[in-house]
Length: 92
Image (cartoon, one colour):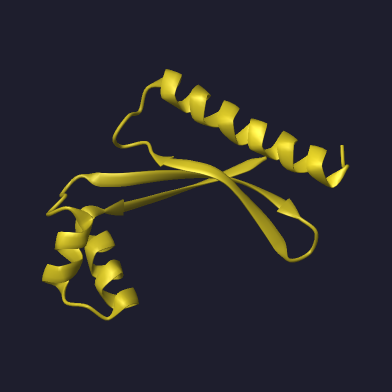
C-alpha cells in the first residue's frame, strides 16, 4: 500500500472546482462550503493492481484532524480494504 499527499490552499481548490465543472467561482465556493484560507492536506491510500489499475483504498483531509490516532485508524481501514480485495481475488 502506498500514499500520496496533496496540499492546496482553499482558494486553489475553489478555482480548480470552478474550472473542472465549468461553473463560476461563487458557485464553486458554495459547493465547497465557503472560503477556506487554510491549507488542505489530503492523504490518499492506494495500491497498484496490474499494469493499468490503481485501487483507491481510502483518504482523508489531514488538515481537519492531524492526530496520530486518526492517521492510524485511516491506515487500518485502508489495509483492511486491500486485504479484502486480495481475499476476493484469491491473491496473497
